[in-house]
Length: 133
Image (cartoon, rainbow, N blue to C red; front, side, top):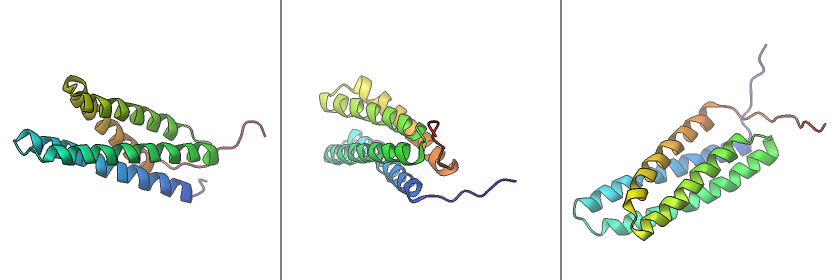
């Protein structure tokens, strides 16, 4: 018999932050596309969006550390660390104008975050027992 899992406040927090992160990152290619059509003011929206996305990514990293400590689940931290590292590289590539790196890394980052979003909503995070006990 399988016991139903209750979603903890820590899980809800992770789901909320990952969801906000996914919504924020979805706007980035829109702002970039509008800029490429000739609306040069959209580059400012893209830059502000980059600040928001990156900030949420760092917040998500903190929440993933809490998940790791409280629930003893390391995979959300590892996935978030990879996404955050890619976002950070992509952020600085965009500032530097290295579009050869910025655009493909942006596509990869969005795809990775969508996979992470699906994983945190689909997969419960039950607390694992410590191996030291």
